[in-house]
Image (cartoon, rainbow over all chains, first blue to last red; front, side):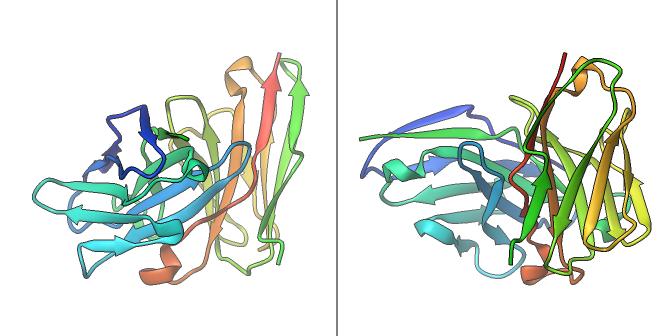
Length: 117
Length: 116
């Protein structure tokens, strides 16, 4: 069964420092991986995805993620954090089991990122 | 484009009452999804639809029903609300093509439901 894990409930970073939000996955076959962000009282917004190609994927707001097949990881990174990056971040994987034509997504439990000034 | 909209934004129900949550999208997307979000559990799929007139069960379908009579609308119904259904409900949609940009789901702003 497909699954995705976010081992950290919360990540705290000082503004200007690099940030990493961790994600590991378990899928059969080639994974489709995603990162979404949720700001307070808002719906989820798409940040970036890995389908195929380069292992380093660049997305919105200066975020990037590195696909590592050997470690089954897809960590989210940003070189220099901003206070405005404070939000809830979800890693997700496309569910390839069952009715794969429905393109369902399995979400991780989320990581709250807090950037202090 | 308004994108994905949800009504109502907030609702309080008593146990046993019924209600319908409405999701509408103006992007001509084929696929639509209903999720619930609970603390520490991420988003869990309730029901989904791959086209007008078709619906299917997701991970946590019990206590909910859905209908997709029009392509742009996806309704989520609670026939007899229970306190365990207190949650934030999100609707999402995506277009038909797979791979590339077609994989992105677009989310509504959510409906906060409290069942007493």
